[in-house]
Length: 339
Image 1 (cartoon, rainbow, N blue to C red):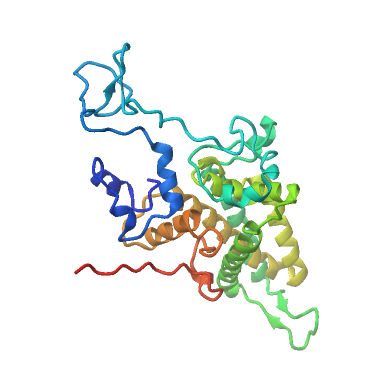
Image 2 (cartoon, one colour; image 1 turned 30 degrees about the horizontal axis):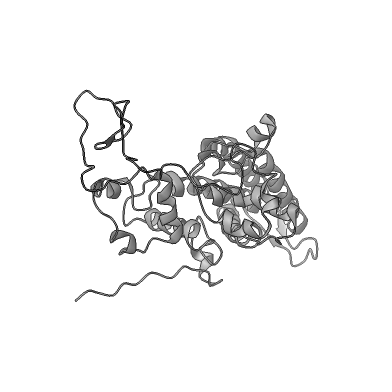
């Protein structure tokens, strides 16, 4: 399910040589994608090693293997020592948050080389618990809030007391009717999609100075952890506790800029957009959309962001719309037709 081409594509090619497929079409696999495969490396078979274990014998390999002398078990590693993963720059047995700041100039390259393993951030079990969230928690926490605030906004507008520009002039102020609520709600969703793009591009993808331990640590806490381990299922959506602080901040800004009910109506639309964004982000990592659908293309687009274009493009997640005017759209790959 993690593969952007879908599980069935991998099953169809199981047991075959995929060297040519890695170079495309439909797309060329990046250096990070090829490096990703090394995590699942089992071993190499040379001529004469293709021995099938007798029926009833247990083995550590799958399908074929090489008998280990003395213990009667089988392993695809054969006579080679390639199954040991390479050493990393950090100690994965300890919390990473306090280690990454010491990487300095090596941090930017290290954090953009994804791995398939869970991350622990904090020594404290309580803080570690608060930093993780199952995808459905976001839906369960914020959907009731969206529904309740939508009802409050609509009923408040229905009273007919809300007017736009009333703080500047009473003669030319514009009444805001309850029938405008769906359009204001949609405006909030559109504004969220823009905010999603801007935060992702300019905050989450800032490049911290190599000499600043604290900014590197902050970057890893905000987003670097996700790029290092993009399929850590407990870190794909925003935890409710820190999310509530950010949501409260944006609500306060809207209250300052707009009349109370109008600001609340825009806010609840933006909050709905945030919930959709988080749910979609999780699905783009773990879902299996049907080939040719909008979500299928969006999943492939997002995977390119993680494995090849981490710094230069594809900053839209729930939509690619803002990548067009900001010129960060990842170009489509082209392949020469063979004669």
